Length: 195
Image 1 (tube, rainbow, N blue to C red):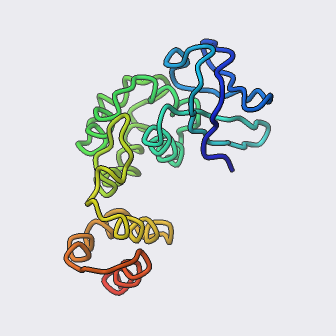
Image 2: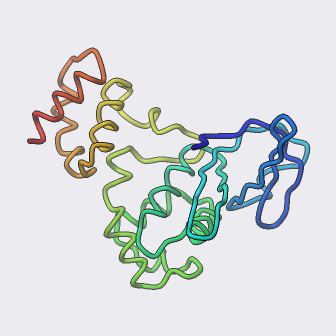
Image 3: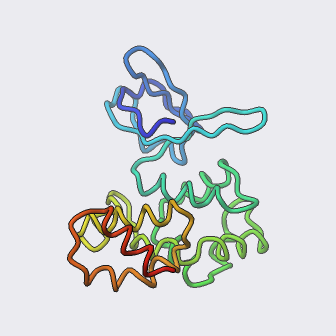
């Protein structure tokens, strides 16, 4: 529902911040509230999570952090609070490296992440970050990809249609050789290659 909030940080607590957007204070749970300062104008990327008896806004320093959070909460056994605890370490490259290299030991150092959950994270997320490009703090995913925005948009559309990152990364080199003019053309070409 929300992508980000532009506003003034009015409150910083150990577990959340309050972002004042034109007189409305949004309580936003974040991994590390102390990355923000009171009376600071900023943009906070957000995700609204609605559960059975809870509705909350979760905030992120940049869109990469938000993207990793969304991947993490898609894993069975990982809720929003566990995902925030994982992000609190701010070592996103280390996290991605652990997932891609089956490093269960690294993942079990996070609170409430046992061996079984760590293996589930690896099983569910392995390949997803390499398909999108290695992400680091402060960089947008598009900057870490081929540089061809139309191609990247086409690949993102394939993923939104339900194709796996492995299927997409398999056809990406072939699509990179094509000199197509729009995301729609890359999407159509990708659909032909996947089938």
